[in-house]
Image (cartoon, rainbow, N blue to C red; front, top):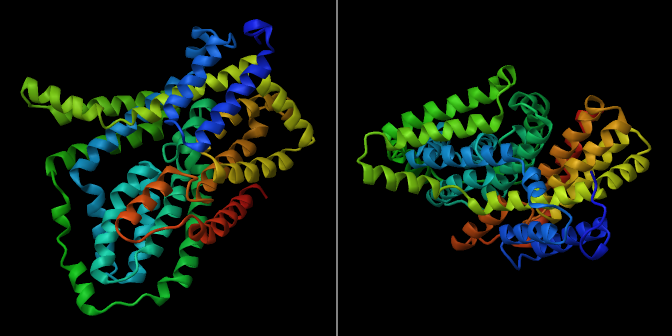
Length: 438
């Protein structure tokens, strides 16, 4: 039910829209922490009478938050074993430390890890290994880093848990892990093949090193990357169990958030098993510190802000205008959502954009033939928003983190320099994504 009037008799549609716009502007300028911005926006929604506290809480998607928290714990504990660095070193040695082959392997490893973990964790784990390898081979790390940025955003598109927009969509539409694999993974694989081929032509075929440098890489003992073998076994058991749970969830009607949180609890139990009380409590606190609470509270506040727009009727109005603009055509709606989401996501954080678009598209469904008819539009939103993360250096958190790490290592990635690659890659990947809807 829409709000009749906000505080002082103001129009709730105007109030909620103003709060959203101001919040987005502050988020874009990065003058305040994003969680603080979202929570202030949610608080103002309540203070102005657009929402009650109960409605704000109702608007929070706790399944999404549970999925995020659960996976952060599972991945955070798993990385302590060193398994991810082990795989990167193993892959480089499989191609005999060839600079050209290593670039391809690291891109593939980045894409696969991003599909199963998250982009930020993946680059934090693999970029230091990349610098280690390139220093030994005495080759320029720049093309490796750029390719890993692109691979992280593209690979994260492949699954439910790979990128936050997919987590939002999966929870909002009750989509399963396998829905994303069936619909998006083929496009991701095709895009990665094209991306690696382009980088191999531009950089890989020109990379040279000598036998001495390659021998140094081959001498790296990959087993030293494994810092805790017992934890490795425990982590693998939990990781595989959680992924199997995601795959089977649709058959047992269990929410993805429940699976992730159950995996997290089991991981905590195994990680602290056999410790004294004080050690167990310290380790448990250490694990909870692995959760990115800024992101969790950002999502919570953002959900409340968007729900305010939904309750005030703004999003229904936008949905009606969207139907009119697309003339009721699914094909036109797909093209519009795909390209607009990519372009917008290249300029601003794709999370608030997708969170806002979900109720807009839901309001369109009755006029566009229902949920089943609208599914191509939903997949277009996922592909566009995730691939748009490659559009600029600030378009995704992983991009910013790699740029920061590169700066510290003396290999700066400039905003304009990145654009020379990012715009063609984004446009090319969206064109490839368009093939899905032909």
